[in-house]
Image (cartoon, rainbow, N blue to C red; front, side):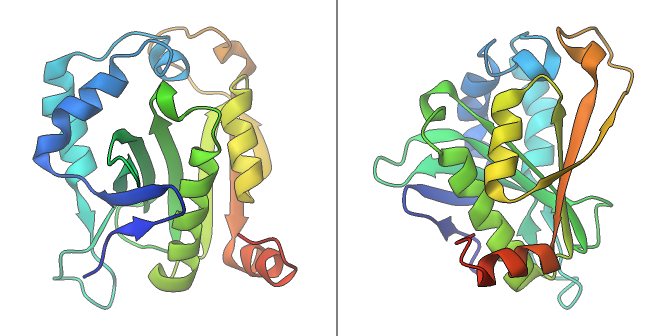
Length: 198
């Protein structure tokens, strides 16, 4: 099963256990973690014990439930250099059905401001809507995370709602809540046929 995606500047591939150090390097950056846990670097044991098993999990397709399945998380590398940039999340919301998936991303600072988050997210939307049988893509971020919100908007998702949840610890801006964005397959197809180039 071909599970490597290439865009103009990115290679998206399944994770393997050897990626733990690269994941730790990104998750150790306080700026990367600012809107996730208030900027605390993630400890090595947390990456090994909690993060890597989640990143390594595959999700089967309905027609091939016993096959290797597709990644829920994709390691993002710079296509030319092969350097690790971070990851993209594109996994079934309920853990099984591909009808609704959650889109997310965590890229190191070397990838910021270059349009790479939008480029990778658009590639995953195309895969989802044309190959995986996805009907709806959802994404959430903090209301104050304007950069991430802009990526979602450029990817083609639209604001659905603002909501409030209890955070384990207070993060600056959490009092303004979180936002949900979404796009359906029908909306995406309309945009593509109108020349949106998604």
